[in-house]
Amino acid sequence: MDAWQYIVLLGAVVVVFAIILPKRTGSSGASGQSSQNMETALEQFMENMERDNEELVELVKSSQQSNRKEHAVFEKRISELELRCQELDGQLQAAATFIKETAASRQAAPAPHSTAAKALEKNETAMEQPTSPHSIEARYGELFTLYREGKSIESIAKKLGMNKGEVSLIIGLAKQEGGVHG
Image 1: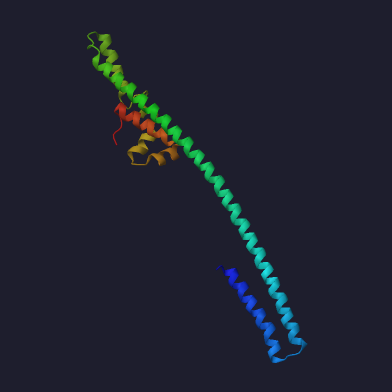
Image 2 (image 1 turned 180 degrees about the vertical axis):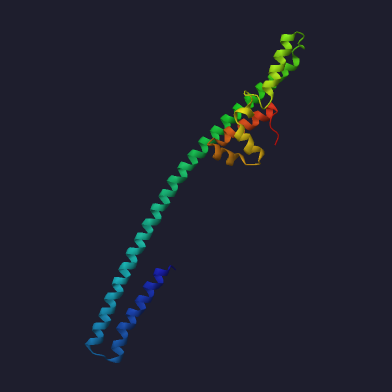
């Protein structure tokens, strides 16, 4: 039983005792007036309790509705983020495949004999180094500094204002490039 039901039951018991008690004692009309006042007060109390309970029920209903709406919004957002993660994963895999194919084609190419070919090879080696302006690590220096400090991908993404998938993709590409260990 709820608390309000106990209160109503207690009020009914008090009303019954108030009606019976004056008859037993044989009191005059003054006690009848006080019992009538008590009945009126109890009726008002019960009406107030009912009104309060109705307001509480409405409040609970409205909060449930708002929770359902928020839940639907969150579910939609989660599904969109999952799709975005799948897209980024596909891009990461495509980039990794491209890097592997490029590395394999470089290994399969015949060794250069001319001076121009040696200079070209030297430039390619310089581009692969993390300090090269074309390397991933050079372009995202702050990201890799935070990553080496042991920060999580979520905290890096928050600090730099990026998506977690984007941070994961950059780190994955850098690992493929050979510039980051961790």
